[in-house]
Length: 215
Length: 169
Image (tube, rainbow over the protein chains, first blue to last red):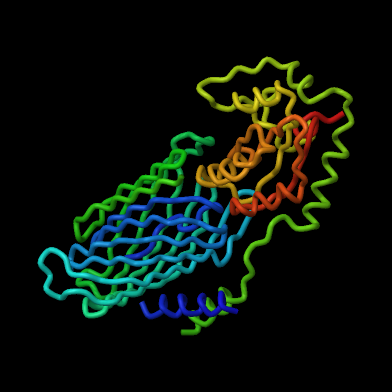
């Protein structure tokens, strides 16, 4: 019952309104480091997976446009995983509670912050699609809703341990921003425990650099 | 808003994916008993082949990762080769949802941490988990299914001994 109440709360948050990490839940006992840098912010998340259905992490995020940083406790719940012999699909709910604080001379001080959202993905060894959303309430620093969808394909299928390469396109929508809709073509490299994504967000001329390491 | 309620209902009504079902388990148990009829030990069977490895990359048993019975067979790596030579018991499990290296890492970490497991490898091509148990050790189908759940995946079938090596008699 508590799990359902938490799910409802996270889902409700996501509906009001960056965005959270890829691969947010690992195997039982797994530790994962995720860095993400998009058109507006850079974040680092370290999460631990106590059970295969959920993870808990510490997340730091710096909003370069508005000069504030977020520090949150970041739980993620794997609500559903679809299995197939050639595919996998996932539905996650994620949230975070912590503080927002001004940086780089921002005089706004500090305030409580919370965020939540949903993530979903579906992939085979050659096709990928995902969606993710986040609503952020950063106190007197403001609120933001952001969501993004991705589609991609692998030009070749690598074996276990080989270098895997993906070509993807991400469409990102942030209604409160001056340029609300952007497109980011990106390339994903994936080898063993390391995932690296490099892209470039058109319209705002910002790089996308994402990195994941799974222990 | 309707969409919101639909998503809500779907999400909140979903159950967490369980491990291999009892139906799966009963199905799984058919293969080993049908296929394992040889008097030859797995190590002896394995020893009949000359495997070459390169930089730890897997070698396919009998030139193919699919056995004579049409199921995925044990994928040979240096570690698996060594464990078989030492008299270990081969097991192959078909895994659902294994599509990337993170999936393989999860399975390797979970199964590799068990004292019964002498060697482990996940082959993305065959979607098969190859295990070699230490001599005298045992892991039941249910235990293998539960370990796969801990890794975040689900087992669809398990074969042991000669059946795991892809040999049908």
